[in-house]
Image (cartoon, rainbow, N blue to C red; front, side, top):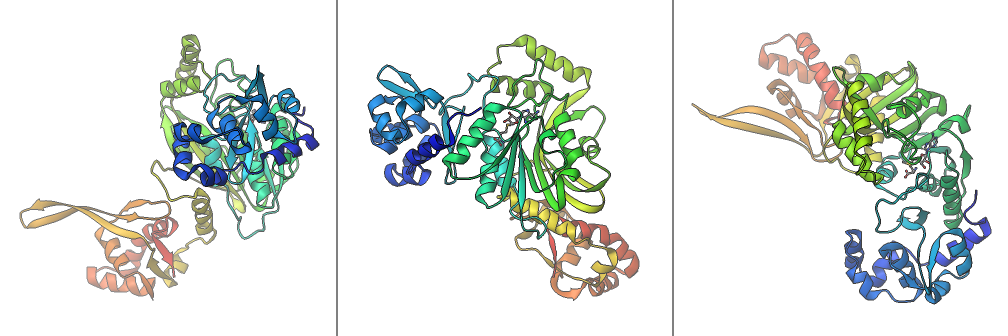
Length: 483
Ligand SMILES: C[S@@+](CC[C@H](N)C(=O)[O-])C[C@H]1O[C@@H](n2cnc3c(N)ncnc32)[C@H](O)[C@@H]1O
């Protein structure tokens, strides 16, 4: 299926030249653009005329009609009949409106079924625009993997091609797959409009790339859990429960070249009496994966059902909600976690770290992911740490709370707080605090422990045995750096 032949799509690309966020800011002012981002179009409406930029802005930013004559001029060298014929524009007497949406991702413009300034009213084959989940994955995708030059990449469930084109723009050779022919048609169109190349393959999840390996795999897959009736291609992967994520995890090591990275967004069940991290850890092969799974939020079943019913415009369907909630209850599901998973292909047994991070971290997330893998590539063994020098990382502060006691303020809690990176907080006891106070990168850990042991009248080996797991964790979480 094609929406426009490649040659016509290239003419659409020509017509689009000059329609960019930078042009909107320069011509209408950054305040007008910022207001439009919040849904206040007054400043744009007051300024947009019948010139090319004005027409494209009215159609694709504001979602307003424009006179057919002005549209014909603004879409040349693409004919108005071609634009209407493929569905890009909808004709209504002497005016046209947008039939597709168009959104910016950096310098690129992506067409999709997501109409400007509109929610709901989706068909089951709806091809998503750039939403919150798309932006999260764009932000997460690593720029470099374990020192390997990034060669080829895979985007599973590409939709309009937003992830695939971002990777292609970075110079990667990109394969993009989708079950939906309409999604692949948008991806092909968007590649041509933006002058980029993609290999596009149609099929179910991993089937189109069986036997192939990549340096980077990204997926914002159809992860919604167990929709009764299913059938919303953009969000229901046709697997029971959280089976899409389980299938991607199981396939991860087979999809990656050595040192390669896979990153996907996921939902996972919180089953009564079980830790979610056991469930997620159980999805991976026993060998070859280093995994970081981060849970950003958990919704209880009712909030989950209401959220996805709103998304598809089915909030009115009480029977559907009841079936869905019954399914959660019958499967003893107390909540659904939303997060993302990073997998690096390693030699040796699989290691999985699952953590909950609800707070705002320093973005881009890709830096956090790269830091996380880089830290784990240099394991902190007891002998090596004993001989090493440590320094407190930049931006780490010690914070305390105190209560007024008989002899003045008594510190009752103290913790380390990062102002950068993951912005972790970590409780510390007075011995660790004293140790860290001397971590300026000059003395070896061995010497520091010996001095501390003298102060506390302790045996150095015993003290080190106690300190080691704490220090290791502080290094792994970026509070302490190896000098
Ligand atoms: C949430 S959208 C993501 C779109 C885009 N990658 C993004 O980041 O915005 C999921 C995509 O997966 C596709 N999809 C659904 N079921 C699939 C399946 N079983 N195999 C492959 N792709 C599937 C949908 O057509 C849709 O384009």
